[in-house]
Image 1 (tube, rainbow over the protein chains, first blue to last red):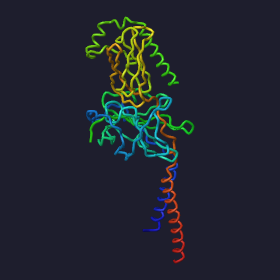
Image 2 (cartoon, chains in turn blue, brown; image 1 turned 180 degrees about the vertical axis):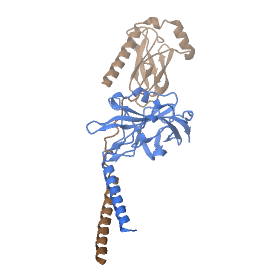
Image 3 (cartoon, each protein chain N blue to C red; image 1 turned 90 degrees about the horizontal axis):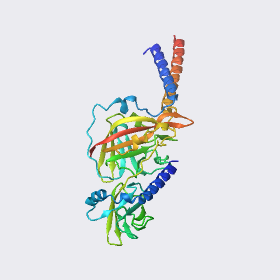
Image 4 (tube, helix red, strand yellow; image 1 turned 90 degrees about the vertical axis):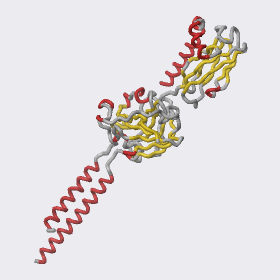
Length: 205
Length: 180
């Protein structure tokens, strides 16, 4: 190799290095679902039929294979203002479910929440906004069965305009909601919204 | 705010329940009683307010079964609320009692029965449903937002390597020029 081409190689490497430093310095935010994943964009091309609901049984673990989520689950209650409690911020790999509500796989709407991040970095549902219609959400239950849900939509709601009834109301079949923080972020007010994945039961293992 | 609203709703329901005693015409409605008794099989009907309640809520029941100045014992064991007394209300033909829906009752339908001192029984159906959460969740503080340190580090490493390579190349050129 000539010195000239070596020189070009070194210059190219320097450019790549500069680009990496520059690009990496820009703030990275959690993935934001695209408009195509919203209900408004219509159902996914391949929508699996709803499976018969299971009898209630508490969930123990939640997995989203597409995004490598695999987390234990804890019971959550309601705060004084009626909002759903959240898992302790110190545990970055913990999902929670509304313990007085529907258990995942049973008829109704099971509500699951987890952190998108904590002070130290990304948490269990950091990648929730990257899910797409048709992806799977699997919940292991105390009765040994695994409830398998398909994602019907991923929506983003502003905190000031959160549609509680649409998200929390009991469904006539076995459904699930997975909720985390998202939308815009400001240093002053934190996350300005919630990302909500809607799913329905399609099978049991 | 919401808690206040809920308390107010509860009070309003209780007032509505008491108000119902002042309307004996409702109990005299034979058609209604007959329909109710068909599924009650020998039991008289038991009015339950509210007919659908959440854990922690107080439920008021009343019935005509115990008769004027009657007393009775209510049985809410189906949902773990034990027994409760029924005594004459301000409207003397009706006995009334209350119990509290325990905190950890599962959602579903529960029979509440009343045994009157006069030997009659009454039965009614209480639906327990759980309060839904409301509003958004607080599940992030922004700790994931920031520069991609891994990428910056890699970039810095590539830059450093390029610099070392550049110096080496320049020195080689310089020594090569001397050789000629």
